[in-house]
Image (cartoon, rainbow, N blue to C red; front, side, top):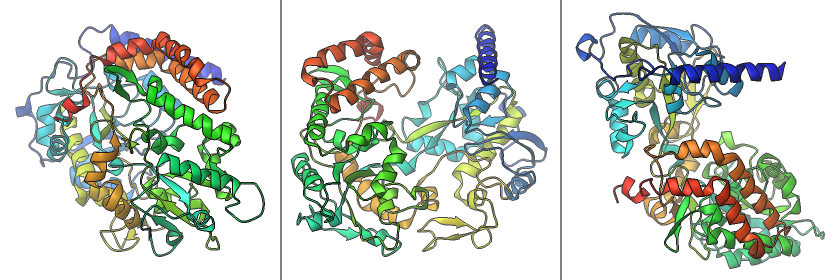
Length: 565
């Protein structure tokens, strides 16, 4: 049955794409971009009731009809909202919606789906005229202008005023998104001095056991510490049962700052000896692999990592046998959403005597830093308008969109009214907001987040971020001089979709990822001689789509040019 369902979805999707691609240039509504602004009401004119089927980034099909947010929005904008009873985080459900062409008026699928161009070419979405954005969504337009080159992102090919999608501001990923941590109590037990002045992250709740310093160690110093963590009984139990480092096998988050010490960000590209290369075939990446292979051979890497994913690695770290782990600022500050993740999980128990030290990224042979979470500019995500939406409906949608996502007076669409539906965790306006237990956190009886996009400026970021995380980011991880020195960005990037890189990624990413992942794992555990097998590995990468991708990447603009540097 499951295979039959998958086949049905695939056949429907294929038929839809063929139909859409064969329908001349009249794909989607408003294909020509013409809109008669004189026939549309002025902003704020809500005399006529407009029916809308609304969906957003957090739609899970659990919103109750007549919820608090729904009723307030309907009254404020004179709309009749039809709720979307589907889980937009479920790839099977979103793909079925796409295959059947039964899409809500607005959507921002978190799982599944297609690219903006594919959705448009399949006749599923309409374009969004610049003139309408400027008139009906002025806050959104201001945000784009403040984040160049935002106003020229996601334009329909061949146009200067027709957008395929709306995008989000990601202030929450600004700055260094990862930091190395060490067991501070182990350092103290071994008589190893912290690299700089340390201070507690917070006064209680476990935060008093987590410390931070702006200083760090070199890679050579870190190696000696990891050796001591492995062989010198740092926990004092008389057993040889600890390791310095615990990687995991399902992503490379564990190595974010270690890679940064080699000047690297995975999936990025760089100039090496005057030649454009991807990180994964660079000489600096080869140096990184050789260091990891050395550490594995020394025994300071837990050999069990090959069988662990990130979540199970968190669980093993909590057992108290690992000395080094990577973390985001919110993990270090013990934000609620990060509960159970390493390294904060080692101090969550009130009886725990463990202590953790968070540091700046390690200093290595090619510098110090972390890959930027988003290349070029902190704009990302996609919010679409369905093909059947009329200009009149779009005018109303854009006003709702602009208000609930970019007017911070609309905080009630996310948390209700402070003192009635929710409360400040700590100091008002400087701490996170906690919804009261009688109201659903998302959708349900409250309708919170039911129609919102995943977009956050600094004020909105504060609403779900503890004051302790904000302090860490403001004082170090997102400080301007730190970002300038330590953020690693690609050399070229197709931000404006001017090349065929997305098409090549879809065609080759599977086989290239397999080549890279297999070689990395075999290299680290010593199954291959890196020096002897390197050229063969690079050639395999190039012959399986890598060469085509690099040739196409040469057509993409320089990141420095995109940023106006």
